[in-house]
Image (cartoon, rainbow, N blue to C red; front, side):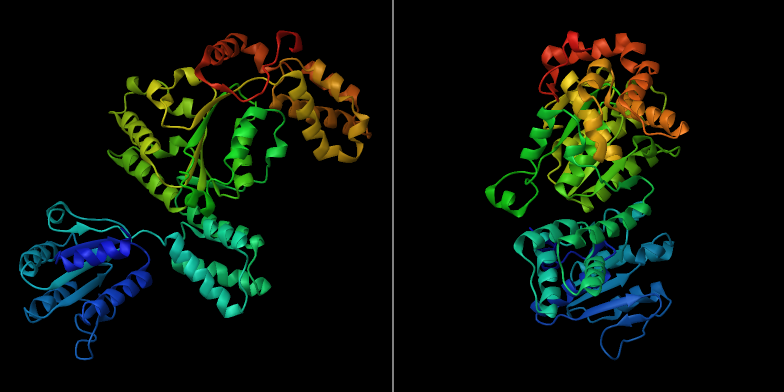
Length: 499
C-alpha cells in the first residue's frame, strides 16, 4: 500500500490524532487537498504559528501565535461537520502541559466526530503522555513512479524527452531526495544545458552529498575508481559485474531482488577499500561511508538513536552503496565491553537490518581480521557473499604494477620490466606496491631524472611487507579462508613459489 492510500484509509477510518514526520510540507498538503476533494470537498484547515489558520475566508488568521487557541478552534467547529485539520510544526509545543492535555481531550472528543487532526513535524518528538493517543504515520520520500512523472513533466516543458536508459539513470539518482529538491536540481541541470542527459547524474549526487554533510554520521565519498583500477581479484570482479544491472527497472520487472551486499575480509592493503569505491562508480550509485565509531555516544540511548538515524538516512538515499569500513575493529569482543550493553544493541540493530532490509542499499563491509567478528554476522542472509582478499599472486602483482604505472607513466609503460618487478616483490600487497612506486619516484626526482625499473627494485628492497612483520596473523587468515569459510576473490591463490 502506498503512503497516499495508507493515509487516506486512516482518515476514512476516523483516526482522531495523526502525527506525520516529514519535511515535505507542500507534497503532503497536495496529497491532503486531493483526499479532501475525494471526501466530497471535506474542508481542509491548515494552521501555523505565524499566519494562524488558512481555511475559509472567515477563519483566515485565527489563532495567530497561539497554539492553544488553535486547538480550541477545533472544539468550536460544529460536531457533525467533517474536517481535516493540519497543524504545522506543532511538535514545538507538545511539552507544554496545557497543549498535551488539550490534545488528549480532543482525542476523546473527535472519536465521535468526522474530523481528523494531523500534526506535521520534521521528526518524531512525542512526550510519553501522548504516545497512546497519537498514531504516527510514515510519509516516505517520492517513489519511483512519482519521480518518473515529475521528470516527464519537466521534460515536456522543454519539448524533449530523454531516452529510457537516461531516464532510468536519473530516476535512480533522484531516489532519496524530496520532490522539492528534485525540482531544484533538475531545474539547475536544465538551466545549464537546456536539456537532460546522463551527465546530469553527478549534479543529483552532489545534492545528496549536501544532505549527508548535515548528518555528521555518514560521509559521501566521490568514487572515481573503476573496476579496471583493481589489479587481479578476478573472481570478485566477475561476481560484481554480473550484478551491475540489478538495480535497474528491468531487473524489477524480471523479479530480481536487490543485492544485499558483500563482506570483504583479508589482509591489509589488498584492495578492499578500493573495491568498495569501484563498485559505486561502476554501478553509478552514491557511495556512503560509515565509521561505526560515530554511532556511539555518551548519553544513554544515544548510540541506538544514531544507529536508527543512520539506517533511515541510508534507506532514504537508496539506491546507494554503504561502505562499512573495518568492521572487525568496531565489533570485536562486544560482549566484554563495559558500556552498559550499548555495543551489543547497536550490533543487534545492524545485523537485524542486514537480514531484513528490502531497500536498494548494497552494503560493502570490510574487515582485516574476520576471526574476531561475532559468528552471527557471518551467517547466510546478512550478505550475499563473503570474499577473502589475500596477497596477490605473481600475475596479479604484475597487473597491479601495470595499473599504477599507467597512471603516472602511461606513455613509458613499455620501459618497465613488469615481469621482473612482479617476481621480485614477493609478499607485497597492492598498497605496498603503490608505495614502492612512490618511493622510486622520490628517489629519481631528487636526482632530476625519470625513475626506472632499477629504482623500483631498489625501493622494493627497502620495504618490509606486512606479510613478513605479521607472518603469524597472515598465515592464520589464509588458513581460515582455505578451510572453505569464504570464497577467494582471486582466481588463483599465490603459490609458495611466487612469494
